[in-house]
Length: 622
Image 1 (spheres, rainbow, N blue to C red):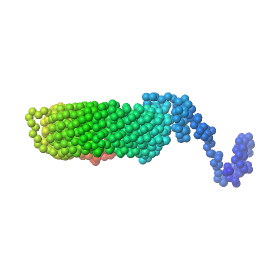
Image 2: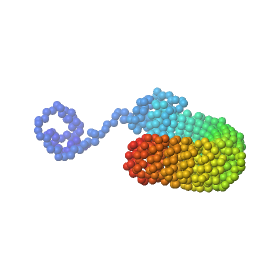
Image 3: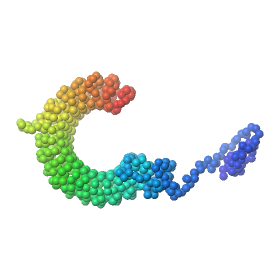
C-alpha cells in the first residue's frame, strides 16, 4: 500500500505511520492531543497521494446488479421515470428495456395517438437519443410522430427503434430515411407494439425487407399512408400483405424499388379502391396491366403521378383513360413516360370528367393532334403544363387556346418545336377569355409573332411569365401588353435580353395600378429610366427585381422618394450601385422585408453592416 507521506519525513517530531489506518486513527484523535509550539520542519520529499483515499466511492444502489435495479426501475412511473433516466446512461438503458407490460402502475395512453412530434437528423440520430425519447415521452402525452433522417454519420440501429416501440405505443407516424444499419427487427418491433400506426415512410433503407411490411400489415390495420423509396429488398410479397390487411389506404407512393411489380401494385390498388386518394409511381418495372387496374379501380383517386415508367406503352395509358374508373381524378402528372401518345392523352381527357390540372413532361410522341383533341374533350381542365414536348408546335398551342374554354393557366417550358411563324387568325374566331396566367420559359424559338397572336386571343391575362426568350423584343411584348384588359398583377421578364425601357414604360403606364410583382432580372438594357417610370406609376408594387441590369444609384433614390411605393422585396444584385444608395435604402427599409445586394461591388462591407443595423427587420443578402 502506498504511504501517505515520504518515508524520510518526520511531521511535528512524531514517528512516521506504518499504515494508512494508523494515520487515520491518529488524525481522528488530533483535537485531544497537545503539541508544544515549535518551528515546522522543512519538508523536502514530495507528497505521494493514495488512490484509495481519493477514489470516489460507489453509492449503495450503484452496487446493485442490473437484475435488481431493473426491478426497482420498473416500479417507477410518470415524472419520476424521466428523472431516473437522467441519472446515468446505465439507468437510461435499463429503463429503455422495460416493456409496458412489465411496469407497475403503468399509465394508460391516448388511444387516438400521441401528441409529441420528434425529428432526429444526421449525427444527432443515435440509439441513445431514441432511448431517451422512448422513456421520456410517455408522461407528456405520448410520442405521435417520429422522423429519423439519417446520413453517413447516423448511428441508429434496431436497438434504438425497439426502445421506441417499448415506450411509445401511441406512435402514429414513422419516417426512416437513409438508415443502412436498420433491419427488419426494429421495424417489426414497432409494428408489434404500435398498433395505432397510420403513416409509414421508408427511404433508402436497404436492410428493410418484406418481413417488415408483413408485420405492419398484421398489426396496423389503421394504416392510411405508405411511401417506399429506393428500398431494394421490398417487393410484391410485402405489398400484397399490406393490400390484404390495410383497406383504408389513402396515399401510396412507390419510387425506384426494383422488386416492385404488377402483382404488388394491383393488390394495393384493388384493396383500397374506395379510399385511395393519392397515388405516385416512379421508376418501377410495371406493365400496362397496372395502369389498366388504376383506370378501373381508382374510384376515389384525386391525384395521380406517373414518372419514369419505361415499360408502359401507349396502350396502357389509353386503357387507363378509357376505364371509366377515374371519375374523381383532379390532378395528373406524367413525366418521362414514352407511352404517352395522342390517343392516350385524349382518352384521359374524355374519361376523367373532373380533371383540373394536367402536366406532361418530356414526352417524345405527344404532338399537336393529341393536344388539340385533349382540349376538345377535357371540359373541366383549368391548368395545363407542357415541358420538353418537342413535337408540340405553334399550331397545337393556338388550337388548344381556341378549343379549351375552361383553361386558366398555361405553362410551356423548353418546347423547342414552337417556331415563331406568322399565322392568320380567321375572323369571328372565339377568344380564350378564361386564360388568366401564361408562362413561357426557355422556348428558344418563341418570338414576336407568337406573342402578337397570344395578344389577339387572350385579353384577360393577369400574370405573364416570359423567361429566357431571347427572340422577343419591345414590339412583340407591347402587342401582348396592350390587349390585357383585366390588368396585369405579375410580370416576369427575366432573361429577355432584348427588351428595353420602352417595354417597362408600356407596362407601368397600362397596368401600374394593378402591378404587384415585376421581375427584370438579367434584362441588360433596362436603365434608370425604367425604374423612374415604375416608381411614378406602380403604387401597388410589392416586389421588384432589377438584378444584373444597367440601373445605378439614381434608381434607388427614385424608389425611395416615391411616396406611394411600399416595396416589400427589392433585388439589385449585380447592379452598379454604391455607398451613395445607403441613405435611400435605409428609407426603403421602413417597408422592406427582403433586400438582395449580392455582387454589388460598389458597396463596402462596412456600409452593408451599418445598413443591417439600421433596417434590422429586413433580411439582407450580400
